[in-house]
Image 1 (cartoon, rainbow, N blue to C red):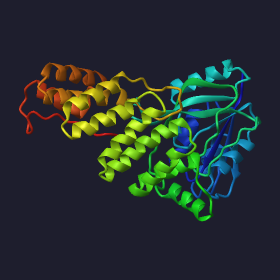
Image 2 (cartoon, helix red, strand yellow):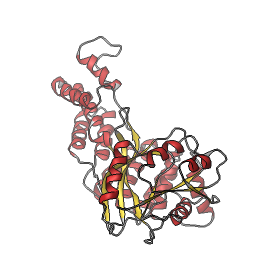
Image 3 (cartoon, rainbow, N blue to C red):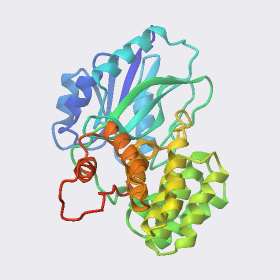
Image 4 (cartoon, helix red, strand yellow):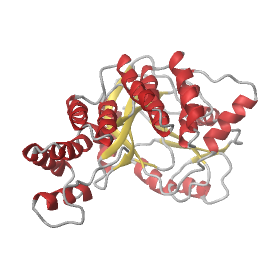
Length: 368
């Protein structure tokens, strides 16, 4: 059986740390907490779970802090969690089984990271991350922001989900400030750094700067999944800049890197629906339903784009062209997925003929 060192970087995490460690104590053989300057009870909470506490001055470098935590590990494998991550009981049991069955020649175990959930705790947005890394094998974190370890060697994908459940917002300007500091120091952003810099600019609604950054990234070297996501992000920039042709071109450009994904097809459907071009919208929404989520690609997956959102919007489109039978068919499909959704309930009242303030209009879900 393998052993696991849980390696975390923390700062003022008293709100969530107990919840995290409570969910991890069943599979972690060692808990390493690298504290970057807590002024609350973070360290005390860590100690109650047997955590080994190490101080590490913060220097705007997440990779450096994570490497420090990994350097303190003494078990076979290092596993990382953020303080606001949770491992459900089901996934705790899967992790304990993995410990007893994992081939010790395995270098990295990828696990699904669920960043957001619906009201029933089903993942809405997820992707695979390198989660379990063989200790003392030369693997290092890279990137002052959005740090990562490049998966290499004997890599496997496990059916285990780590859930990210924030209870309070983090500093929205932190990452952008770090990138701006890097630029001020004369660093040239390339590859992954350039991609995530563009995403920070987009998050701050600096659409023109973000668009140029994504264009620069797409011209250079980059991981294919980042290229695909950059196309979606670029389309969002152009949408906000009211550059319609460029928006559509950016979405279509994603097809150069991989077969069409549900995200791109849905966004194209929404583009045409917003312009009341119902047949084109129907084509792209139905295309979204024919796509398959790229489960082990490592890319971002927004699960509703592969089912619920195309279905509920197809209900809208078919009603607008007078095909009530088809509209009702897609209503039933969206209802089967999310019976408690307000839009589904609205549509149900519509089909049952209950008078409403806005007859002949369906509630529509916006792009998430």
